[in-house]
Image (tube, rainbow, N blue to C red):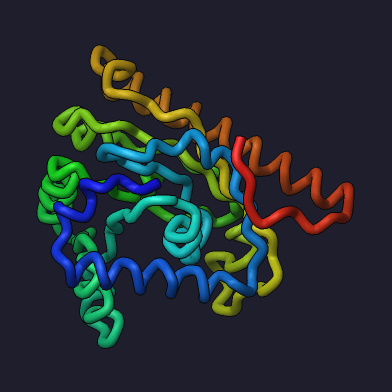
Amino acid sequence: MSDPSDKTRRSPPIRFAQSIVRWFFRINMLPYRIRIDGMKRYPRTGPMLVCSNHQSNLDPLILGCACPRPVNYLAKKQLFKFPPLGWFLRWNDAIELDREATGLGGIKETLKRLKKKESVVMFPEGTRSRDGELLPIKRGFCTLVKKTKVTIMPVAIDGAWDALPRHSPWPNFGATINVVFGDPIEPEEYADLSDDELTALLEEKIRECFEKARRMKEHCKMLKLDPPEEHGS
């Protein structure tokens, strides 16, 4: 069940747009086989910063399918300049991030959304992986969660790099993508941690999810079975 208070915080046009976007994501991901683990760990209420590794440009679509509640997305400023993509992003109330500047505008808007008890997807590695492996996590998320005291939801994706590698313009339809949600990190767990300690904790949680996703991938290869579309644990 989704958080009923989400409806009161979003205007009807934004709710309508996000509903369309979720269906758009699902339709676009039909050529792939997505397996989701840990859905029961995903909080059904309250604001969250959803933190994931970043393998591919497909990652926002994958998380749009996997997350059971509406989420906000950060999008590079350059993407807003290309119609109809720019119109599409604005219609969906995406958060504009200017990487060439300080990015303060995107940070302030993200803080605003979190304080409004919404959820935001973030890729704390800061860039896509070149080989599908994990990258070090940057500390930028620490300011967001410590100012807003929201739950951190660790998640890992494996298989998105196979489906659409960074160096390839062509997707590999039929690829299997595994998504694993970890145990949420609650505000009381990180209240007394330094930025370095919190970064290490999140990195550990995402790595645990990633290793499980990788084991799921290898297990399916070994059994030569098509994985089920979705299950929780």
